[in-house]
Image (cartoon, rainbow, N blue to C red):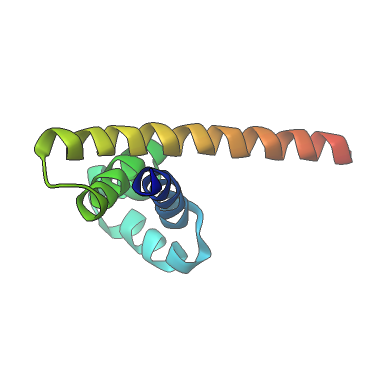
Length: 99
């Protein structure tokens, strides 16, 4: 159970740091400017980055099993996309309330 909670939080957190975090902003801009579009998508897309963050967290937290690692990537993708939608919705509601 602890590994599952850690997986969920770590996958979401890692994805949001890569895509939105100020610590990666200069690296993100460099990748967008110099890398091919398929690679630059990894620092712009929650589903893409979430998949790879889920894979990394799955490798670290669970046994090495291709099916399980792939499932971790899919779960990380879904969790990251859902959380991004949730945060954007909450932010837009907050903005509307302050106007």
